[in-house]
Figure (cartoon, protein in one colour):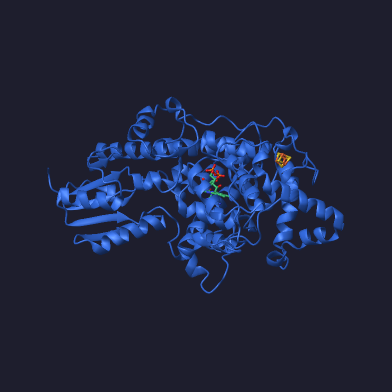
Length: 516
Ligand code: FAD
Ligand code: SF4
């Protein structure tokens, strides 16, 4: 065995070919990537997620070797695999007799803590470097909102636009077109017959990885996979192809139909880039720059509100939730503002519910490990909040089921935006709705056994009674919120008998939710 001076750890979500580490080949450095049980088992993941991570890591290791770098890759079944990051690092440091250990800033609190603990107790010199991916520092949001109780996303987003000069006039302070935000324009229902263009296919055979999971045994996963036709981008080249397809074919309609939902199309005009971004195969800056360049090339094809809406997701929301995560962890994952305690209905794991919107959103999540933002927020998240599910259970579901799920981005979206368990750090009001919103934004209700107009009775849509029940039971906490006043005015004006029937029906749903 040839000795090395430095061991560098590359985590599964740090597959950044353009990191400065790789700019020159140095034979005294060994890079390590490792598949471990600590990562497969900290939550029950979708099987496509485990396979997607391992597949992308293996291809990244091949890429590094092809460029001349020394790589030590530990497969899940390697006899010397100690199955945790820290134990493997110790074992490899000894094996290569290194004097130095280096790692990139991890994005997950859990991993950050583990590597800090390792560094603190270790005799070898350790160094943590930037992952060179994000557009804001970990503590940038905390500094911007120093002394404030809530963090306004719009303020953060504007600061980021100014910082990076994205969609700004030459003076650096005025937004292009004079307007910062076109959100109000981006809420159209999908007209009948409109379809998104076919996305590029990355189908490959991943039977070796599904066989590996079976062979080692004990890795509990959810969802389905077709091993011979696995269709997520696993390399930078494929991720760039997906980006190119998006900016050419989907971005023009992204704004209009961002909030729409349709039975015939699970993705609509969304990009499906989150997995590539979260594994750092591509960078947020290059995604934004490519979208802006596509608009400059064909301004007549890409409406500015579509471009702004897309830029806001990446330069705004994605950086913002990361800032919230680092400002609020570890207490954030314990917050439960409404003191909700109900279990997650069993059909979240099977899709076996009669409610058409939920059957679709859960079913496609199990099938594809993907649902777009409004499905996550206004279908599965909305129902869990109305039902009063404990946020721990909601988090575990979201952290497991989606291909792009990593705690730094999942947690503020789920516990904050979707469940309002942070009491309003992320959102100014809970995202709840009755069937009215779902009927307006989707075609789910047309083929549902439940009637979106009825509030109680055997055919009444369960969202309706639960919606009023939610406001009624949380009146003390929510009545004073100026953004919710309207709902309470309507509730107060409703006749007493009507309110009683609604609440009785809600109670029935809560007691027998597995039958719905
Ligand atoms: P597009 O609609 O095409 O958006 C483009 C990109 O913008 C995304 O790829 C993503 O990187 C970014 N983005 C958009 N919205 C958000 C947001 N709210 N927060 C952070 N980034 C955003 N996103 C994750 O990446 N991982 C998660 O674990 C995750 N969990 C979520 C849980 C809930 C309850 C909710 C409501 C949202 C969650 N999101 C999560 C945010 C968002 O739903 C996904 O990023 C998006 O659906 C991914 O699909 P896409 O790439 O087609 O996105
Ligand atoms: Fe969902 Fe209710 Fe519409 Fe059925 S009627 S699809 S349950 S919102």
